[in-house]
Length: 323
Image (cartoon, rainbow, N blue to C red):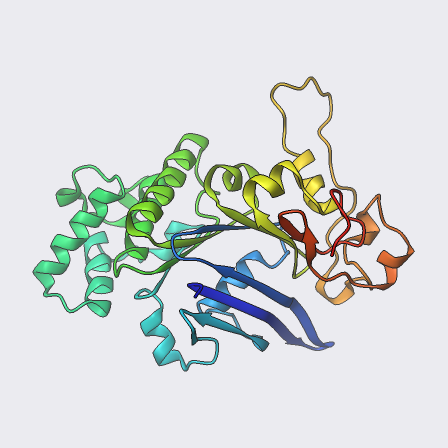
């Protein structure tokens, strides 16, 4: 049984012009101990997918169909009181901006201790000991002293380590990390990525890593799902998707990554822009930007089909005919 299974997930927003579909039939699973990368341009639906899983969709967004199950238990229709018990205890979350995740008025230790005692039957002293151990595990030096500091007394990289400690406080089975390295410089990014990989390996926790950075995906993940306009257009083992992309959009993402060994005057780019949610074209949503598009692409929407070791939603994939 998969740890997490998302099946035909649809998220819609109500507006003056009616319902706007932001996620359209998303399906994937995450196994125990696996790191799944979720990648795509801004507006593709990456963060929205994570928010739907942990029950943090902002109104007027709501799940209109589909299922989300955690170890076989359906969680997408649970009341908020039960969802709160799952968040933190079974699913941890790491967000892009650690400042937004930490209360500036409370010491780091108070926030960690409160989170630990909310989910685990520990005394305050036991929770403090556990909080110090978590800070040490996430690489914060002099944790016994730093635990009594406020968020503003930490650097950006250190604040993100504190947020990771918060996410791990109750030994969750799954961690959803939404752009956890975007605001950090490159050297700190590498440290945070290394930390996530080590924690996943040692704690046997699964990670859903949401990012727009294919380099982070390549360094970190076991599998990757590529999103475009609210749909998964390719999913498979990270090595296959990166080195032998089946979907033209994935190939475009890979071609846009700078090659330090190549002598190029200009980087490759994908012409055009992702469509607005209320103006998604018929057929394949990518066809207006695709150099391989044919008549069928303009009128028929492809489903995910097997292409070698990956699955891609394309009528004319790069590597083989979809089955």
